Structure formats: C-alpha cells, structure tokens
Length: 223
Image (tube, rainbow, N blue to C red; front, side):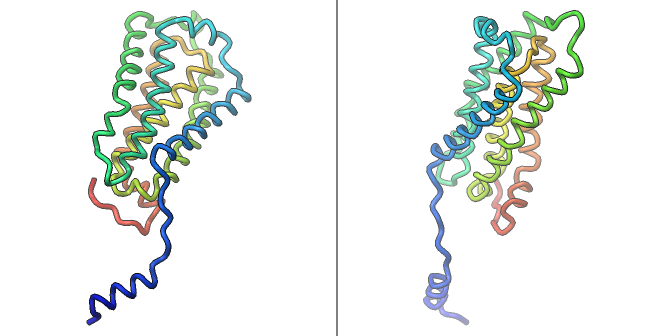
C-alpha cells in the first residue's frame, strides 16, 4: 500500500495548475456588460418603443423599469457570490428589495390599470416580436451565466442558478419594457412576472443537472 508521503508527492507532481477565479463582483460586471451589449444590439435592430419618453414620465412605468433592471444587476451579483462556498447564503437576499418593488409595482398596475391596450387588442405580430425579444435576450445571457458559473456553482447549484435565472428574467423584462408597447396589466403579468417564474422554476428543478452537463467531471455535494 502506498505511503501517505508518496501519495502526496505523486499528487503534487501530477497536479495541473489551477487558474484562480476572478472576484465575483468583477465576473458579475462582465456579465452585465454583455447584457448591456445585447440590449444595445436589440435597440439597433428593433428600435426603442416610440412612446418611451412619455412612459418614463409615468411613475409606475419608471419605477417598474428601474426595479426590474436593479433586480437583474443585484441578482447577477448574488449569483456569483453564492456560488462560492466561503460566501454566506445571506447574499441570496441581496436582490430581494428590488424584486419586491418590481413585483409590487406590477400588482399596482393590475389594480389601477387592468386593460389599456386599445379596442383591437394586441396583434399577433406584436406578440411574436415580444417572444423574439424574450428569446434573443434570455438565450445568450443564460448561456453566458451558465458558462461563467460552471466551475464554482456546482457547490451550490440550486442557489446559484436561482439567482442567475432571476437576473436573466429581470433583464429580459427590462428589454420587453424598453422595446415593446405592452400597457395592459395582463400582458405585464404574462411577459414580466411569467418570465421570472418560468426561469426561476427551471433553475430550481434542473440546476444540478445543468451544471453536471456543463462540467461532468466535477463533484456535486448537496445544496
């Protein structure tokens, strides 16, 4: 049987160099730069909604837009922080104030402005464009988040993917508000709150499996 000293020497001799991960705030900043780039490309391709300036003068819209964007930023920071084992799980509460403000604002719009989209309703073309924006925003941001978290997040897969998905959903909701005219509160719930629930639900259900697929050689302790 091999001696402990020989085993240590063998492991040390054959160990591959490991590159240290960048600080979590810096990685979150890089992801947010990508998010801004995606939004800029979508703005160049689709254009900003024509009534954006007028809408920004409405407190409910302005607060909802700012809250969703802030939820995305804080969710990204929380995702990279909780993915590290030496960081407290209390970082999961970092985006909570912005999230509560965002969701409460959606609820307020439901109470005060249930339907204001016009007599003809929402056209199929507008709905298709909204769905395209949702996919074009969420897909690259989700893949980038997955790749950037693949080495650290397996230690806490559910927590990391839940925060990452919340960040993606919030940024996607921000994009929908910037690019598409959806004033009916039912539509707000469908696209904004619905997007967040779907993304977070998928992360909770499949977070561990996703990271196992991305980094199959890593071990996955219980969350």
